Amino acid sequence: MSQQSNILRNEEELLPEFNISIGQCLLMQLTTHGTRVAHINPHTGKEQTFQYILDTSRRLAVYLQREGLKVNDTIAVCSENNLEFCIPVCAAFYLGAIACPLNPLYSEREFKHALSISKPKYIFISTVSFNGIRKIFRELHWSPKILMLTDGNNNVSWASMYKVMSNVSIDDANALQPASVNLDDHVTAILCSSGTTGLPKGVMLTDKNITTVIRMYMNTNTIPENAVSLSLLPFFHAYSFVFMILTILRGNCSIIFSHFEEELFLQYIEKYKIEYMPMVPSLMVFLAKHPLVDKYDLSCVKTIWSGAAPLSKEIQQAVAKRLNMNIIDVKQGYGLTETTLAVLRSPDGKGKLGSVGVVVPGTLVKVIPIGEYETDKALGPNCEGELCFKGDLIMKGYYNDEESTRATIDKDGWLHTGDVGYYDEDGYFYIVDRIKELIKYKGYQVPPAELEAILLTFPGVQDAAVIGIPNDKTGELPMAFIVKEENSNICEKDIIQYVNERVSNPKRLRGGIRFVDSIPKTPSGKILRRVLRDRLKSKL
Ligand code: ATP
Ligand code: MG
Image (cartoon, rainbow, N blue to C red; front, side, top):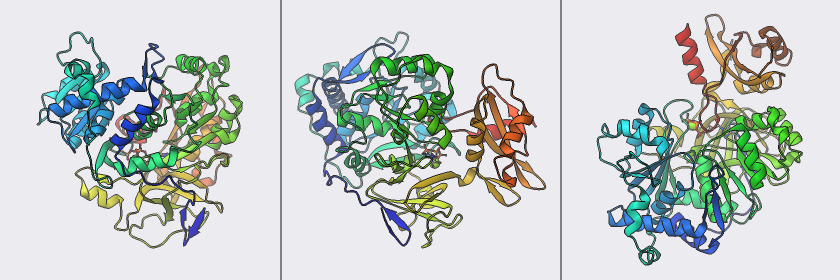
């Protein structure tokens, strides 16, 4: 790790630049992986090989090309995780078109918002997103074509992608030439941010962004070759979308879960001997605490990554212990949709408990005083501030939204994350919370994530979320929403006492506790505190 005037970089070498597009890269790699199994749907047992992905995606690309789809046109894929998801994505990449994955469970308002960002010419949908799309389809002010991702959908008037590509011969598919594009500048995907703090934003990722990720992971052991990997996190989220591309390129077999069911999740890890598991903290809490976990042999699991939201060191430790894993194999990554994938991650074999690790090669990081924007100041070790990143992983900008782009990437190219954190003397980072979520109590800043971590260690607490409730005298008071474990008879007084014994005075749970059935979260496992705040407001 080198540190110059408090700007940190990782001296590890990346692979040399590729100088080919992501589409060209995929075509090359898919050809080399041949007839090995790429994907298995554990719910149905259905499999597909790399060769099948290559053949099908090329045929679809030829069909779309004949229909006039061009470089920089957009297509949306609106589906839960399934074997078909990657087919239109690869096809778009070959043509230099822009892939826009979308949450199939968006509300009507969110669908309209997300679709109006990218205005796709084609929308590929699954039966899960069918109803949502059907309702808003007529209200869109352009006319996208809709294709179903799967065949055999009775009562559905839209054709399937398989049907429309059936006229493309395999010879025509083999002859497909990938589009040549400007690698530094060409947008290859528009991904929606999670919408944790408001409506989702359309993040433009370029070929350069994604090939930089490939240069980071292709020849390293960070994703071990041939490891069977878990695909449970939704593909429409950057973390899982980019990982899906990486596993195809690397030739890993992925077990693609369409949804999470406690028992099936554990059963399929055991059955398919899943070794490599990208996870989020809510799933980590499940592994750490749920009684079912002890019923299964999970010794196949070699590496777990947690990202997308804060993970406490207690849960990290509890997962390692329960799965009998070395703590350095339970890793953390930190990133934003705007940074393509993780920009901080536990280094191989050298993680520190509770830390999101060190900056990845090829990226710069600094911590600046909160509330400043275009500043030359960069804070030293152990000083909390806003994390900022620069380098080839940083998005091109928000699609058609220069104002938001300028408010996020400053004129020197630094992406301002809105997250508070600090690094230690060894350059290991610790995330405190989002600036927007910090609770203000008498001028003190209280990070809800810290209180949630403590609450989760209280026996009988299954899940917890903390927000600030307005208070005339103090500004805000920290208040907790708690989900009790089944048959637990924990009470408010004991929980508050437990927390208050472990925190400094301003962090005490002065706003009290409410018991609830569940905590609202995004599909990527982030607590939707704005929803809790709204609920509370409407109750009052
Ligand atoms: P929106 O920007 O639409 O409000 P979002 O920021 O949640 O939503 P994402 O891009 O999916 O959308 O998430 C990035 C954010 O997730 C980061 O800014 C950070 O707050 C949080 N995050 C990611 N990884 C970690 C981690 N390892 N620890 C703590 N927080 C994390
Ligand atoms: Mg964000």
